[in-house]
Length: 112
Image 1 (cartoon, helix red, strand yellow):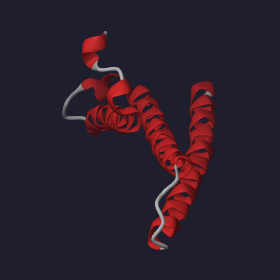
Image 2 (cartoon, helix red, strand yellow):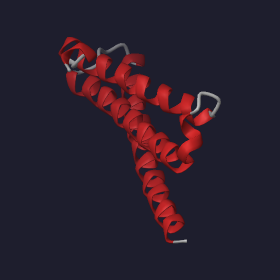
Image 3 (cartoon, one colour):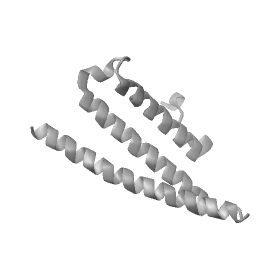
Image 4 (cartoon, helix red, strand yellow):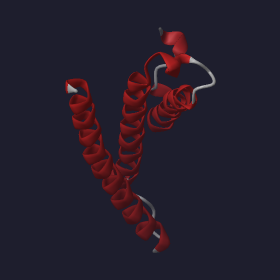
């Protein structure tokens, strides 16, 4: 029973974090869209804000999938389990976001 309560607590924290990240992403994108729609170019600060918000959302999503994967236990490791695909996709997506955010400065798998 205690483990279930801890799981609910962790999920609740991620719901709050996810909501905050989503709001930040929407705010950054709305601001960028308004700027571009007016015919102006994005400032470096606006570009950074959009990239940061994307990275934050991707990181939260990866954490949520990891928690679900951990809760799934032994069945999560099988390719037939949908959590396995979610786990792989979340980790692949975060790498793509990091690459887009950091460009050539991002560490690659060959750096390990």
